Image (cartoon, rainbow, N blue to C red; front, top):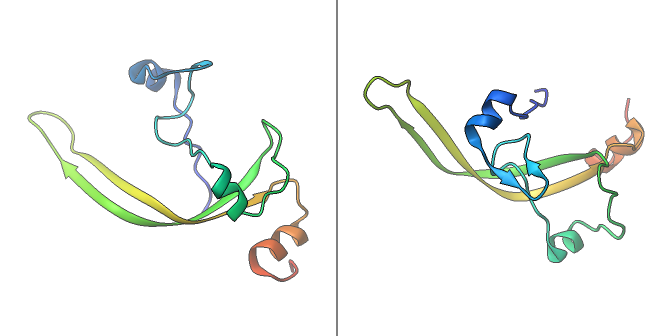
Length: 109
């Protein structure tokens, strides 16, 4: 499955009006995950990545809830809530071989 860009369109940002420290976010509320000291230690990060660096994010999550509802004259709305239970970060600048080794414990073929 390919990754899906979750960035909101200008119209979606206008509708959401979720101000942030640096103005208006380009992504919907709730997609930002903050890792604290304990999480950073568990992930084995000894040097923090620089701001703006790209990393691959692999997560295992459990579905906590699902919801589907409709109201008079409106399209049905659905949602799903996920609890991340396991997490891995891979430096996006790694070679394919390094990334495969980090993910699968073997060389890329």
